[in-house]
Image 1 (tube, helix red, strand yellow):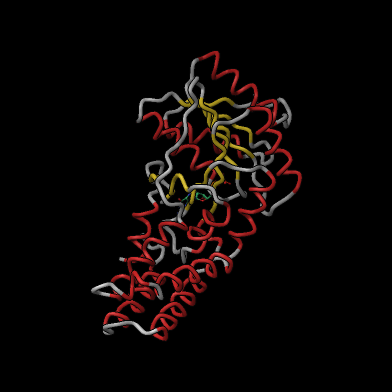
Image 2 (cartoon, helix red, strand yellow; image 1 turned 180 degrees about the vertical axis):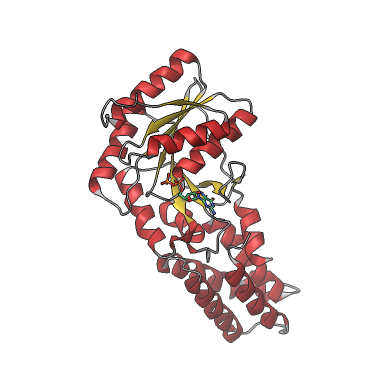
Length: 300
Ligand code: GDP
């Protein structure tokens, strides 16, 4: 994974310098924390997340657990690791299924974030796990969006519910509701609703997504965010949290040359868990997200 390459090497370098020390002075700790702060900011982690993170690391690094440690430098690395796991959401969070099927999963996010691709990946994964997903095409803004979901559904060998062609633009809320009804009738056990995205945050989009949410009462609303969007991640995530609210996050394009900021900011800023990482254009490029594994990769 190309992601985090820079951040990872910067942190490794910082800790290498620390390892040459025996006991750590307050100045050593401050110097290290300053380096961590710079590295995180350069990786496009949101400022408020960086501030909270470094304050916590500093406080712990100046405390007894480091002072009394046999290997203080190693202890600081351990603290950074633990705090990284913390901002990435702590425990792994799995997809939540409804007690009574169908489980309704709604997707939200900006256009181009990777929603439709993720819909196909999730359908494929669910089928592999023995589920019977139905994809619902509720992105009726872009003329090609329904086709695109159809292509993805075909690749995933999954069923799709889409408005009849030639029926005009259609109402995404009605289509979503009809999709869930169809799933009930035909006994699909999961419904994946692909909603419209816009290039920027836009009130109408938020209202539409929020109305789809109210109409279909999803068990999960997954916010798909492009890991490459850097500092915009904070505002985008907050806007979707406020406008639609979501239960979990999908980080997409983690295979790309991202500096990692979005990944490191979004769980902490929104207090919503990252459930999946999308790591390529192929439908098999999907991983369950493990905060501890991600932290280890960054500190590798
Ligand atoms: P949507 O507008 O949110 O539905 O986004 P799409 O699913 O159409 O994805 C936009 C573009 O990003 C497409 O060219 C996808 O092939 C690409 N894409 C989606 N997910 C990933 C990913 O995890 N990695 C990479 N490298 N590309 C992705």
